[in-house]
Structures are given as C-alpha cells and as structure tokens.
Length: 633
Image (cartoon, one colour):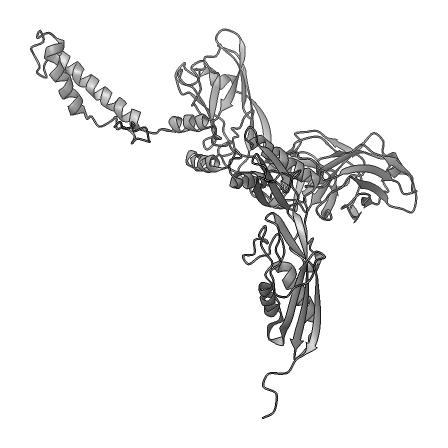
C-alpha cells in the first residue's frame, strides 16, 4: 500500500531561531576540521576569533531581517497579487458657476478661485477654460421618459448680441445611488438610455439644430452640457429662449429628474500649480544619499500624485534631465531619476544610489521645480460657497458640494482594502459571482440581480448547461408616496448593455451569459372589509400597504425586495391588510389573481423562479360590521 505525499499547506518555516551564541558556537565547532588542525588558538585574543564573532553578529541581524514582513515586502506582494497599491492624496472636485457678467469674459484653465470668508484660505483652480456670459437663471419644463418626450431648458436673455461664444451649463440630475457625477473620481462612460436631439428656439419662435457636448450621458448623471451660443437667442420676441432635448429610442426607467440648471459652469479642483527656481538650493547638495529639499509653506499640502511633481535640472554631464515623483522607493532602481514627496514636512527626498539615483548637479546651473499644493479632506467644502477670482473681480458659486478629497492611504488600510478586493468576484464561476459582478456594474445604479443557471432566452423551456442568465432590477425612487412609485421598474437599454459587458469580461470559456430585464407578474387583489366606523383614509392605506409589500425593491417580509420566484401567499396579504386597517375594520374575504388569470381565495399565487410581482390594483368592498359586544343580553 502506498501513501500519497502531503502536498497541502505547510506552516511557514522559522529562519531566525539561531542566536548570536548559537552561530558563534557552530562556527567554532567547525574551525578544527575547516583548518585541518592548523588553527590552534581559539581564545578571544585571536584576531580570527574576533572576525568570527563579527560575522556571527552580522548574520544574526540578517536572519532577523529575513523573517520580517517589511513595507517593501508588503508593497511587492500587493503588486504580485495584482492589487492596487496605496492611493496617493486625492484632490476634491466640484463645479463652479460664475455669476452673469455685463460682457463676455474668457477665463483660461488654471485660473485660481479663492473661497470667500474662509479661515483655511482654500483655493480651487479651473480644470478647463470657461466663458462667463451675461445669462441669468434657468428653468426646466417638460419630461423625458419615452420616445418623443421633450425637456426644455428656458431662460430670459436681454444682453448684448453674442457671436462665436460657447455656453456651459451644469445640469444637476437626481441620479441613482452610486452613479457618480461626470467629474467624480470613479465616473465611467456607459451607454445612454436614449439618444437626444438638441434644438434651440429663440424669443421669436425661430429654431435651429445644435451640436451639443453632453457629459450627463443623456441625463443619467449630473454633468456639464456645452453648446455654441445659438444665433436665434439674439432675436426679439415674447417667448423665452429655449434649449430643447427630444428623446429618440428612449428606455428610461422613470422620468428624468432635473434638480437645477446653472450657467457659466466649469469643473474646479482643490489644487494650485506653482513653479519655483531651486538651482541655488540644489547647488548646496553634497553627492550623498537621502538629500532633502524643503519647500517652505507647503507643509501638509504638497501633492505627491503622478504628474504632480516635475524637476528640470542640469546634471554634472551638462545635460538637462527631468526628475519625477514616485510614491515610494519600492521598485526604484539605482539609476532612476525619481524622488519621494514628504507631504507632512513639505520636502522632497532624493535616492541613496540603491533605490533612486543620487542627484549630482552642474555647478552654477539653474533648476526649475513645477509642483502643486492642495488635496486632502479639507477640500471637501459644502455647497453654496462664494468664490472670487484671485486678482480679479469675477465671482462664482458652487451649487454642489466638493467631494473626492482625502489624504494618502496608509499601508495598513491598503492591505485591508486589498484583502477585500481579492475576495471580490472577478470571474463568473458561480451564480453568486454572476450576481455580484452584475451589481458591481459602474455608472448605472443597479439595485438587484438574480442569476439562473441553465436559462437561455432563446430556449426557455430547455436547460442549457453552458448558459447563465442574470436578471437585473434598476434603481427607482421610493422617497415619495407609493402612489407615485414606478411599481415595475425596468432597466434601460444602456444599463443592460453595460451589465452585459461587465459579465462578458468575467465569463469563462464556453459560457453564454445573458442580461435580462425583470419579468413581472401583475397581482390584482379583491378585499372585502367589515368595519364599524368608516374612514376615507382606510382604502388608500390598504392600497399603499399592498404596494409596499409586493414592491420589487423594498417589498417582502424582510423589506429588501420581493424574492425572485417567491409565491404570493394570500394569508400574508390578509395580514398586511389587517395591520394597515388597525382596529377600525377587519378583513372578511380576500382573493387574488396573477395577470388576467382566475381569482382564487385558497391557493398561493405561484410565479417563475426568475420572476417578480407588482400590485396592479386593489379592489376594496366595504360591508357593514357589527360592533363588538352588541346583541341581545
């Protein structure tokens, strides 16, 4: 009988269990044989013994270091596992909207804006150019939901005639949770829910087509809408100037909700670019490792992200070269022209010749340092701030809060994050992986997902082993009264396409993956209610309770959405109605039906394993009740 070798996980070996005394003893025991008996003096006075003691001491240190899990080892492990390294300091971003000017003003990218009455003296710089035009408030009318719907952005213009100018509008959208605005750090481009055809109408009713740069993704998220100033807006007439967006091939889940539109908008970030001559300071550097260049006034605000630091310096050979910043010395070679930013102390640290090159400059040469300051959580200012141009008179406000600013990630936090990232599904192996991947689709705000193995949309009656279908449910507003809810929310075509691409990227060879909209079954309920004191609010309370209970997003007994394939039990509906009625009335009979089927009062309403339900209607019949305790005595 043979036994298989043990190839399972083993305990990590201990390699630093030898002390200095152990190493010295082993070396001395080996001296007689290694010296062929010619080394006879083994006392402390022998210089050879002193060398052995020195080597034993050094080896003990090396053994100890070899056993330690150091920061470079952790960083190298993260890279090996494909996990993201600690993120650098992040810069907060928002959108500034300039107040109308008497005449057009052009502001270039990088223009510095100071936050008024700010004890911290925070400044944001414009991420791009903007033209400040003499336009005022805007209002929004109309709707976008289905084909042919039109949304109008209106304003009253009485300024000078404009030509060859561009207008930039901030369109603030009430987007689904998790959908970042266009300027957000994790914002992604996804297919749109509709194609929008843009036209402009002037005060006299004349119209013209427009080519618009739309960063909102057809109003899926907040973003900028940029357009050339329409010539028809320069006319005179009784109407308002209008910007129309007409939907074509629309598949919105529900009506687009625009919270506001603001003119003269441009993205701004908590970042200020600076340039400084540092040749004199670098001349004082000796060709030694770990030299530091301090930048007074940058303590705690010096940025260290990719591209944030650029040093142009003439080296000893007379050639001008560029040095850049890196996050750490791990991976830096002895010839790399890199440096590390010490943000807390406002200094630049150069290499030691092993990790990073030692800087050697040419005598009398100049050096230019381009760097930036800002970043961190301090830049996450709230909405409604008043801003003024640095050295100018132009003013602006930020209708939306600035977000995304945070300090550099510490290594422990990055390690914990990487641990969670490694547990996150990236390949479609199980149905749970399929659901997790679908819900992780960025930019669309999917709320629920249900995977069915073997389901092929083309062959619904046959189990196809290589197929897997994922049913996804989008976000729908649930903050209003149930009467205003979209009771059977369906994902738009863009969301389905984005989720499909997400799953295709993670599928295994030979798998067929399909992303489907929910298949809903309409529930109709007939209730007979006996009451002793009628209230007109009872009927609406019953209907709202049933809508909530059968809701695909927040329904069910756990409030997390009606379960896929969950049968509708009439006894549970009776309990819901009784709770909503309270002591004012009682249920005497309840029947229900699916779609246009026959009503029943005794059997559960069964649905398919990947189906959901919604309340189509609740018909309530009121009958007189006999008060408790009445009758003959």
